[in-house]
Length: 135
Image (cartoon, rainbow, N blue to C red):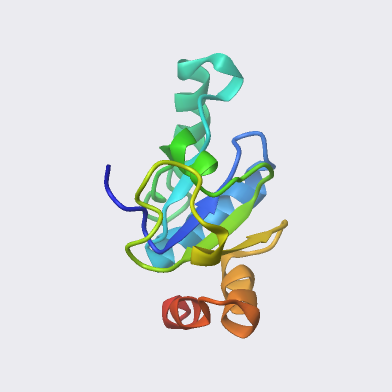
């Protein structure tokens, strides 16, 4: 198993489409992965259709980045609600779940990726990672 990246955004395809599109755009700008726990509505085709609709280019835009399915990362960081934003110490959390909470910061709530990173940059243990990732 590869080590998770230093920043991860956890979402659900059941979130409002506008929120998901905004997070996809922000995550693409910062090269941060967006992760869902599993397939939507227990149907792979529905999941594909929802993701395709989210990443399709709008007028003059290039396609947005994708969405990964990774239930292990949800377990690894104890994510029970979304959206959740994790900023972690590099090269940690590579073993079996759960990851020791002292190795990461997590922000929950319907906020932008930029706001979540700004909060970690001001108040988090891994403020330097969050600060470095902000434009």
